[in-house]
Image 1: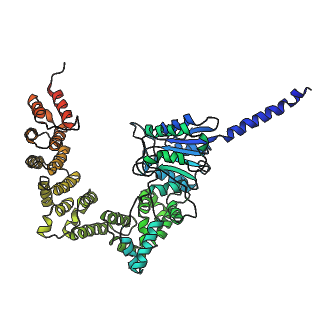
Image 2 (image 1 turned 120 degrees about the vertical axis):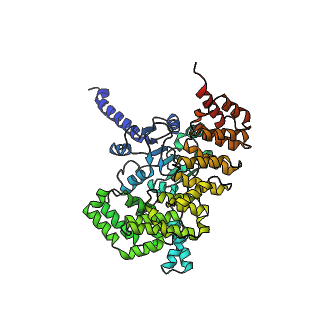
Image 3 (image 1 turned 90 degrees about the vertical axis):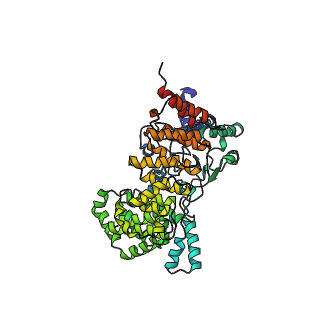
Length: 557
């Protein structure tokens, strides 16, 4: 047999092995594109295809695309996530019709459950293209009730202050902390500490990087100083995944138990019960996660024997209930206190009547401290959206002077007081901008339903003196889609008299949302054109109104 023929099979085998090794050596770039593809495409164009292969994890129209990627056995060397991330709860798209998103909670679930151990197991780098993805500011703050709770537990003021600081440090929960925990042990995580560049702008910066830098610096597991310097003006920063040796490792392990799919509902409730047995100052740190988990239990879950038993054990723990409610009564922020009251009711520690009494006590405390503003009015109206607290109004005993204050009147009106409601309607036309703001917040929850009331309010607003308070009042009036011809005519006349372009714009905002066709015609257009004040901002709402009015009465050709 000729030598060439004899060794041909060996040559083919070696060639096949070489091709396999070359393919195996290629790094896998996983992409999660829920908004702009610009960053992904820029990396794809600039990275050699014989060294990098790209895999898009998002499958359009399939909600379980992350689970699908896990089932396919994909292993990522580099991950590129692109999406808006403004409030830190999810990556999302601003494109009309786009349904894909990536909730942070889903990433936490996958990470904590170890349900997809291969997908991110060999990650060397993560790129998070979204605003605030590595923002270091904690998502929630814990006010002075922490220190007071520790003092009440027996600690000296000095020790309480020290322990409060330690708890704050151990329980820091920022976007950066969450991403570090999700991508555990990943050596390099890129993201943005504040506003991130939009896709085309980020792509432009990446192109500039690749013009002077080699692809060998990508997916190495080492921070890329050239890339960081180029993106530094747009807040890019870098961190590394968390490790078991980190100071907050205990908190991260506890936090994971709320998301771990391997734990049953009964096991998670047992953990919640144990958590509630700790210092209430620490329980406060877990409030978000506890209330989210308890609130996620369906009625069917609660009827399950083991879950019902776990809930009974919590409900019957009188010692923990007493400490929890004592802490709740000392909480500074009324919104947090209301949440803790709601959680106590969900855990079986408060009956419906006891829950109402606790909420009204909280409201009374704010009134007694003269600490009521727009946020408190918004909170009380939201708490009483179903009018369940109307029956508790008698518990609040205010002097005539207190009840006549706009802030206090708004609280009483939120609780069903008709007299207070009338006082707030008058406040909407007040020359005091702060009083108008209070009325605006109240009316967002309790819109005017009576036609005579609405006419009276509108007439009073027209008679205001052109201040910022009138602008705010007009903005409030715009939500009512007026159809009263007399009021609309009065607003058009007010437009001709206004000395402020802001007032004119606010009037335009009312008219454009109203049935302006009842007064539409050449005369209205003349008034709008001749009396409009000059603006340096170009086309505005007044121009839009003029076009709409003209289109409503001019005959169609």
